[in-house]
Length: 296
Length: 310
Image 1: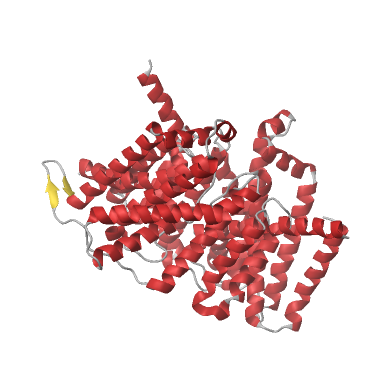
Image 2 (image 1 turned 90 degrees about the horizontal axis):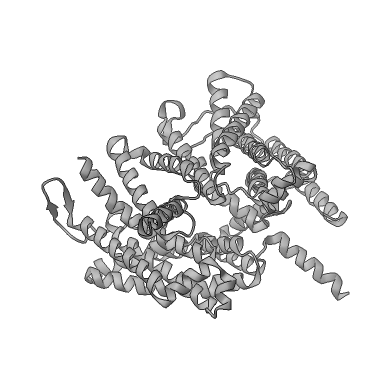
């Protein structure tokens, strides 16, 4: 029973991690909060619904397609909305919040006009369960866990090993220094905004059978993204991964042993407790420990 | 504020106060009452965020706490209503101070999550403590502040509260305390080395800010007469934030202008029916792209431009 709950928590947590990483990435690199982030999730969910129930595409193709489309939408948003505001103010955090809030309202209402307010969804992508000795896990959840873990690993590799990733890291650590070393700031911004949107596309596709899809479904993931980002430390990717797992496990535990009504409350209370001991989020502390272990 | 600004404020205030006597449209008056409520909340959220630099994502929870406290004490204890409203404000203020105590040693963004989490916890508590709050059904049968059917009295009390609140806010900002608040926002360490008691000021300002939220919530409860846990939701906090950012964060008039602008922009497009919110969103994007520093910043820039042409 306990093991079962921990594993369920890990599945949910892995997907929260993906949501959080996309959100925290943008903050780390651009110092902005993207309030339309949940709406990117919503668009991906609708895309998956149409692709799966109308065109009967296979899941891997849906994932690939939505990621590509959302990458384009994210990059376009950066170019069309964020860049003009960014270029005109020195401290752009507040105007960008407002612009993305406006975009949130626009996207929600466009979808409401096109698709209506009804809840839509499909039963599940995969059927059947895997029954091991100590716990049971459905193939669907196993797939969610696998895809999320692969995506997180891919993002981590992209940031640590590729030239683009190193440029992102450089910009997040010191913007002026990065520009002086010849990093094209604007291109890094556009690509990372696109990457963030592409990341949230995956939860949008995978969670669609669980959460359904409707115009305001984005409120759920953005709340989690906020929580995970802040718990992990703003802009800290490893912290966000860890934070997502912690949030997922604590939520699952609370709903299993206490009540599903108050699970969000318990998870948040637990988060406050963690922040009392690690005031800057858990990411920086985790990195300290890792460095001690690797280089004793 | 220059003398011209002061005169403009006085004139627009007079116009607003005369408005309900001339235009007898109940719906418009209702909107203005809500605007007064939101303007006051936005102004005091701005005191926390814009002036002190303390990000507060759970502000709506204090409005809710004030509303529920006042309504419940009026219904169950039968206290006189002004006292109930004061009680609501006081409880909000005390909880506001208590929440900031653990935040004192955190970095700014952790304060954001603690306040966000508090808001959610308060909302969940309000919706699951059914014996006291009747849960999602909401409280109804709250005694009204004034027995008469007319909204005029509510209107004047609402704007009276807004006026008193604004004047007190201006006095606070001009005092030594206000200077200290801005100093903390600009550079905490420099403020500390100048002998400013950072922690005490942070607690005091959040107490004041949450007290006002509580009083306004109580006023709302005794005006609308039914309240639901939805009052605590992040959506309202974001609306309040949007108002003060739209008007200009960290300015005195910004949040008030923002509240008027956003509420009446939202209502002005009612004739567009289904497309209303779409237009509203597009308009927010448009205005922010034209005036990235908010309405007040935009107006100031325009003002600078006009004399130079002469």
